[in-house]
Image 1 (cartoon, rainbow, N blue to C red):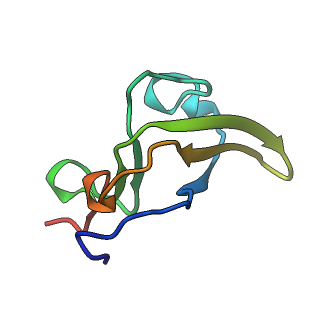
Image 2 (image 1 turned 90 degrees about the vertical axis):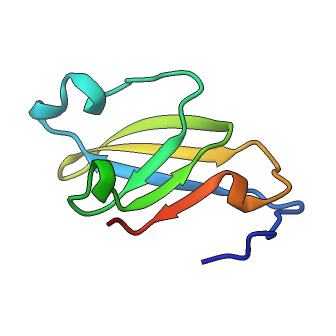
Length: 99
């Protein structure tokens, strides 16, 4: 996906994550405003979990902004921005295709 010695110079790695808000997401890991310190951002896709996890993991210091939108359905947006400037992107970004 990227060379192991790829570096970011004067660039910012950032993105937005959006999810639907339903009544079943009122507690646990999917609850609104569920925050933790020193936790990486984990993007997962599909049905994978555990050893079959598929997705991206960004393990670096990030800032977060959380917004709830009320369009046709309720959405929760997480805008994030990496505040580290690593010497190698491979030290903080992991891409897993699953088993």
